[in-house]
Amino acid sequence: MKKLIFAAVAAFSLGAAQGAGFGIYEASARGNALGGALVGDAFEVDATANYYNPANIAFATNIQFAVGATFINPYCDVKVDGQTQDRMNPGWFTVPAFYFTVPLPMDFAFGFGTYTEFGLGTRYGHNWTLAGDTQKTTMRQVTLNPNLAYKITDRWSVSGGLRFSWIQFINHKSPYHRDTLYQDVDQLVSAPVRAQGTISAPDAYHLNSRLKGDDWGVGWNAATSFKATEDLSFGLVYRSQIKHKIKGNYDMYGNVDGDASGTLNLVAGGNTIGQLPFAQHIHLSQYEHGSASAKLRLPRSITAGVNWRATEKWRVGGTVTWTEWSSVKNIDFKLPYGHSFRQPLHWNDVWRFGIGNEYDVLDWLTLRCGYIYDMDPSSKHNGTTMIPSGDRHIIGTGLGFKLAENLYLDLGYSFIRMNNDDRFIKVKTREGETKHYKFATHNGFSHLVSATIRYSF
Image (cartoon, rainbow, N blue to C red):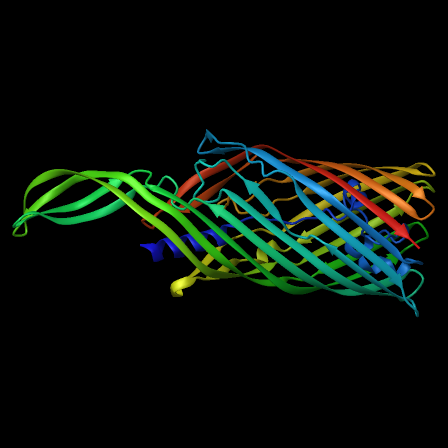
């Protein structure tokens, strides 16, 4: 019994973590406010170009630094099979970023960025209906990204870089939450009569589990930037897949405790001679510790952008990103006791569109705003409660301050509105059956507050 509980819970804990898209695009306060529309910006180049388009750093003329963070608070109302649950609200998450660029001889430039490309965080009430799927999940990811750029002409540049990705996954859940315990009984009543049958104890599983693991992986990126005119420029960025094999520790603790009852058959000589009401209190302490691993891929993406200096003070831009979530077809697991498991995902490729503009009101003050439409890649029939589903609409605003000759402060606020949506959730019972639930989210919002300091020498 212990081995079966361990194997099943470990598989579904880690597998469900990847049940929906979990991209993070908040790389700087300025970029957040402009809807990410900095991919083609070869004019107002700063160190954050290491994320938006590394080819643009070839047009920088001095050493530049940028450091900042985005603080994210997602929440939504939840229903399961039409029944209202506690609100999903994991609190605030911090997404830090750091960048620098250095011009090199012979039209080369070097840049480095550390930022977050993927992540998620959800937390539900302790006793909610789908606690057997998840109670709290956190995924943290950090990319270390060195880039080398080369200016082919005064208008055209290219770049290439490596992406060293560290990822950590933590999942808490209540295995077999609200399941009924069934126990076979075959015992002697009085010779030669035996009592045989099955007794059941509703809601007997009071277990908690935690799975925590991490891994390093390596990918790459390539980019180009082209100034069509003195005021119009284009950019293109490709980011490869990154393969991860998460290795972690699994702990499960608690007890199976309940009053089991039922009617047993009285059997003698192979014949049923009567029936007997039967009751028994069951108490089993549970504790397991072991290791598990899972192979997964972070998807590749292609981003294109255009930026235009409409006037000396007014600048506009647009960007579009395609992400190949369909390439993550399934996740393969290796579990303790020789068990293995394959979790199908059936995600969809998605698009993300962003537009933004900024205006220099004064020599020291810039106003910014932008809009993003972000498609949800998750499958309706292979859902998870790890993250809320639904397409997202993001409205960004921001201010830019020139604090000194080479010192700038960017502040941003974005509001995310998630479309109401529903998914079908599959949860395995202790007896190996699959229960189907309709998981619906509504009134889904997120607040994003960001700040970045930029300095050039």
